[in-house]
Length: 235
Image (tube, one colour):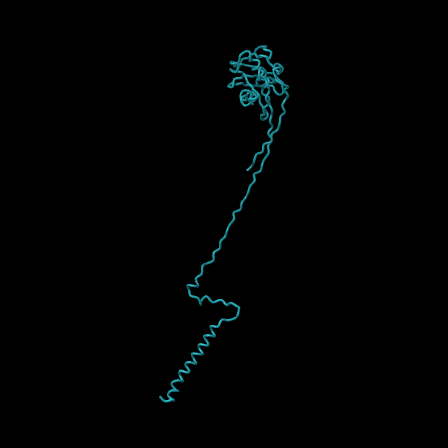
């Protein structure tokens, strides 16, 4: 092959190498990492579709319930109370026991306490009664005179205990004022009372505090009425 022919064959190859070198340099220039510290975000359209799918942001809200504390108001009411004296037997005489009741205290309330409360008194006092626990004593009052209906309450009382029986009733009914008189009936008919000295009176004859005061143990002083404050919550 002649040298001329050889030059013609090498010329296109040389131009091809040059073109390739230029393209390579251009590509290297495009891949050069910039020293700039700025950040340029890549547009979304240059990412594949699968990478462009994003998880929607979630927001968590915590609600703390309000706590309300309501303090109920309190009302104060005053309840007047009355200290009464109920008489029970101790030995061969009678002893006063003070009890508190809501005022005003009726005569009937006193009689109920006399019949029902002996078992509630301290056993150290060794108190007794000659009034039957099932006794029904009824009362009515008119012009300072209290009438007591005995019914069958007197039936089981032996004669020796009758002064104590009447003393318990009369002293309890008239205390603490010690004023007034008491008469007795049985089944609606006048009944004779027996005094402390064993004297039997006429049926329907009245008796008073002084007829039984000698049977009282100790120096008896009138009790003092009080007022009790009761606190009631209001919602």
